[in-house]
Image (cartoon, rainbow, N blue to C red; front, side, top):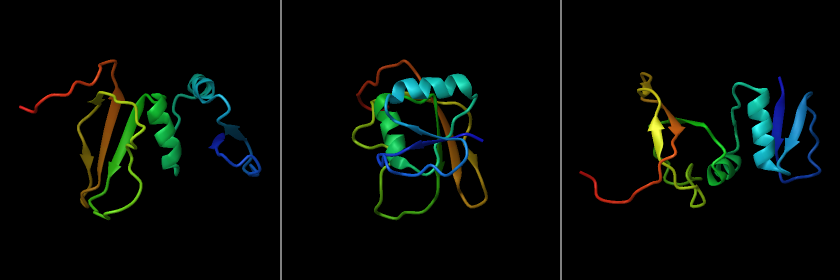
Length: 117
């Protein structure tokens, strides 16, 4: 299985067979990944997710919500996130522990601010 590694460390050894370093031209590299694979998942790098959100380089956002309040840590939506209107793709899926999967897709709509209700 191919593995794409986004890293700022040019000296990082890519020991996993089939590994490719990404980041020189992220938009072009993401487009090539989309053309080559039906699905691409980001695992373990919230900093990379922040970059994808800031650049609008995502089609679908799968958010796993765990019912734990930690009070600290990195935000999913950093201040650099591109303002976007998302649409819920399916009803939330929740397990017996309250863990919920929310699947959102992008839209072309521009966010509007106003009042609720």
